[in-house]
Length: 102
Image (cartoon, rainbow, N blue to C red; front, top):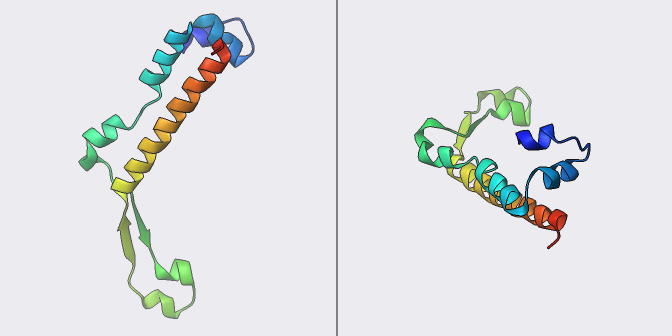
Protein backbone atom coordinates (compact mmCIF):
# COMPACT_ATOMS: atom_id res chain seq x y z
CA UNK A 1 0.00 0.00 0.00
CA UNK A 2 2.99 2.30 0.38
CA UNK A 3 2.94 3.35 -3.31
CA UNK A 4 -0.72 4.42 -2.93
CA UNK A 5 0.00 6.45 0.20
CA UNK A 6 3.07 8.04 -1.37
CA UNK A 7 1.26 8.93 -4.61
CA UNK A 8 0.66 12.70 -4.97
CA UNK A 9 -2.98 12.22 -6.02
CA UNK A 10 -5.67 13.01 -3.45
CA UNK A 11 -8.22 10.55 -4.88
CA UNK A 12 -7.80 6.92 -3.81
CA UNK A 13 -8.39 5.42 -7.25
CA UNK A 14 -6.19 8.01 -8.95
CA UNK A 15 -3.43 6.97 -6.56
CA UNK A 16 -4.06 3.26 -7.17
CA UNK A 17 -4.02 3.58 -10.96
CA UNK A 18 -0.98 5.86 -10.75
CA UNK A 19 0.94 3.53 -8.47
CA UNK A 20 0.06 0.12 -9.93
CA UNK A 21 -0.91 -1.52 -13.15
CA UNK A 22 -4.00 -3.77 -13.19
CA UNK A 23 -2.08 -6.98 -12.50
CA UNK A 24 -0.18 -5.42 -9.58
CA UNK A 25 -3.41 -4.09 -8.06
CA UNK A 26 -5.06 -7.53 -8.38
CA UNK A 27 -2.01 -9.15 -6.82
CA UNK A 28 -2.05 -6.69 -3.92
CA UNK A 29 -5.72 -7.43 -3.20
CA UNK A 30 -5.29 -11.20 -3.49
CA UNK A 31 -2.23 -11.22 -1.22
CA UNK A 32 -3.19 -8.70 1.45
CA UNK A 33 -6.98 -8.79 1.83
CA UNK A 34 -7.48 -12.46 2.82
CA UNK A 35 -7.16 -12.96 6.57
CA UNK A 36 -8.93 -16.22 7.42
CA UNK A 37 -6.18 -18.71 6.56
CA UNK A 38 -4.49 -18.45 10.00
CA UNK A 39 -7.89 -18.88 11.66
CA UNK A 40 -8.43 -22.17 9.82
CA UNK A 41 -4.85 -23.39 10.32
CA UNK A 42 -4.95 -22.65 14.05
CA UNK A 43 -8.61 -23.35 14.78
CA UNK A 44 -7.94 -24.50 18.33
CA UNK A 45 -6.42 -21.11 19.15
CA UNK A 46 -9.67 -19.25 18.47
CA UNK A 47 -13.09 -19.55 20.03
CA UNK A 48 -16.13 -17.58 19.03
CA UNK A 49 -18.63 -18.11 21.83
CA UNK A 50 -21.35 -16.23 23.58
CA UNK A 51 -22.72 -16.75 27.07
CA UNK A 52 -26.40 -16.00 27.45
CA UNK A 53 -27.74 -15.15 30.86
CA UNK A 54 -31.56 -15.37 31.07
CA UNK A 55 -31.74 -12.43 33.47
CA UNK A 56 -30.02 -10.24 30.86
CA UNK A 57 -32.41 -11.34 28.12
CA UNK A 58 -35.69 -11.74 29.97
CA UNK A 59 -35.21 -9.49 32.96
CA UNK A 60 -37.12 -9.94 36.16
CA UNK A 61 -36.40 -11.69 39.41
CA UNK A 62 -37.59 -15.15 38.33
CA UNK A 63 -35.26 -15.37 35.33
CA UNK A 64 -32.22 -14.85 37.57
CA UNK A 65 -32.55 -18.45 38.75
CA UNK A 66 -32.47 -19.93 35.26
CA UNK A 67 -29.21 -21.49 34.06
CA UNK A 68 -27.00 -19.67 31.58
CA UNK A 69 -26.28 -21.09 28.14
CA UNK A 70 -22.99 -20.98 26.26
CA UNK A 71 -23.10 -21.13 22.46
CA UNK A 72 -20.02 -21.97 20.41
CA UNK A 73 -20.28 -20.77 16.84
CA UNK A 74 -16.63 -20.97 15.84
CA UNK A 75 -17.14 -23.05 12.68
CA UNK A 76 -20.02 -20.93 11.42
CA UNK A 77 -18.20 -17.71 12.25
CA UNK A 78 -15.18 -18.90 10.26
CA UNK A 79 -17.38 -19.92 7.31
CA UNK A 80 -19.07 -16.50 7.37
CA UNK A 81 -15.70 -14.72 7.48
CA UNK A 82 -14.44 -16.76 4.51
CA UNK A 83 -17.57 -15.87 2.50
CA UNK A 84 -17.18 -12.21 3.41
CA UNK A 85 -13.48 -12.29 2.55
CA UNK A 86 -14.27 -13.81 -0.87
CA UNK A 87 -16.89 -11.14 -1.56
CA UNK A 88 -14.51 -8.33 -0.60
CA UNK A 89 -11.74 -9.69 -2.84
CA UNK A 90 -14.14 -10.26 -5.75
CA UNK A 91 -15.77 -6.84 -5.38
CA UNK A 92 -12.40 -5.10 -5.10
CA UNK A 93 -11.05 -6.91 -8.16
CA UNK A 94 -14.15 -5.75 -10.03
CA UNK A 95 -13.61 -2.18 -8.85
CA UNK A 96 -9.99 -2.40 -10.02
CA UNK A 97 -11.15 -3.57 -13.44
CA UNK A 98 -13.61 -0.67 -13.60
CA UNK A 99 -10.87 1.81 -12.72
CA UNK A 100 -8.40 0.42 -15.25
CA UNK A 101 -11.10 0.00 -17.90
CA UNK A 102 -12.37 -3.49 -18.57
